[in-house]
Picture 1 (cartoon, rainbow, N blue to C red):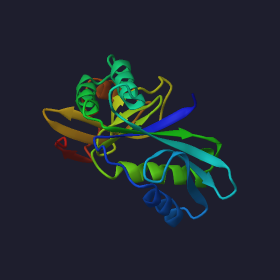
Picture 2 (picture 1 turned 180 degrees about the vertical axis):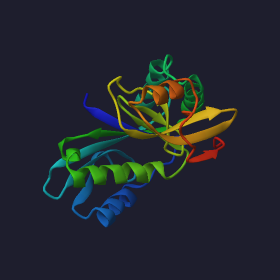
Picture 3 (picture 1 turned 30 degrees about the horizontal axis):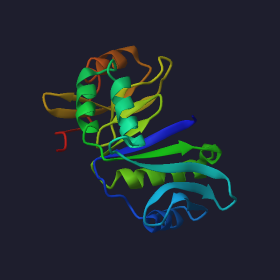
Picture 4 (picture 1 turned 30 degrees about the vertical axis):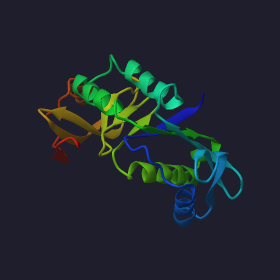
Length: 208
């Protein structure tokens, strides 16, 4: 299967191939996008690679429609997060997923393991996400809200290090940076609370 990260968007419209190709060339001149499947007008999958032909990632565009791959992906996400924590984050996530129209799936390939390749991949993903009405997902990590803060825990028990997190309390997002390996921080997040020894980076209401 390989490792995937995804942008889940409520927008059925998608950026043109030329826009994405120009974005990569302008910001990461040693990298390029080529069409794997589809046409320039209706691209289905794109290859991100270096000028040395080392493959960095495959970007798949999966519209969410009856019987589609995108619909199956969304259904799988809802099913696999049923028992996840915090419950408030999961409930918000399931409401968001019900409105997703497009799944952009990035399969990370060998070239993504280099610093420059990883930067090009992250820039492409961010470009898709910053179009708005989108959240991020990463295998074995979980999901963000629309502001890019992590709201559902799918990490392994051995994970550690600083991470931007968000909890939803009484209709307000509280965003903070916690240590994933700190047992008190972890317990608070899983209970849908901000750790008592941390301060919020910022607060915001969920976008509609």
